[in-house]
Length: 113
Image (cartoon, rainbow, N blue to C red; front, side, top):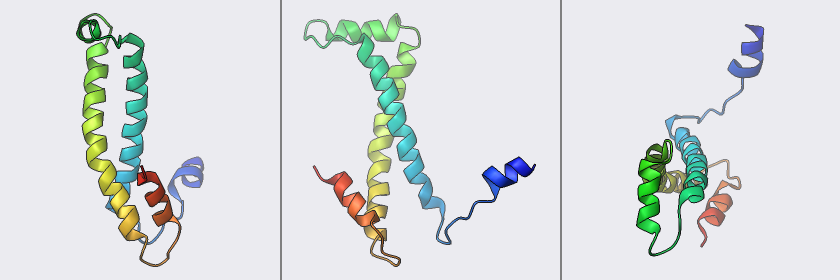
């Protein structure tokens, strides 16, 4: 029980910690999921105009768990494009309140094209 309290349970948290902080960790999780499933799908996809549809069929039918990777990748895309703007807007508009730190600069630099 001391190990639990020392390393996991008794960390100091900021006073303004609330539900909206979960969007950052959700965005990070989905980003990692996108990278991993994208690498998996890239290994089996053929970027040729004549072979593209056949390679997607191959991924869906013949690759073990290929259908799951493809659906995870497409669902992750939708979740990432819905959650990331809300997370970045929270960084942008929340950085003008006290205490002012560099979160606004990091949000601006991450959205800069």
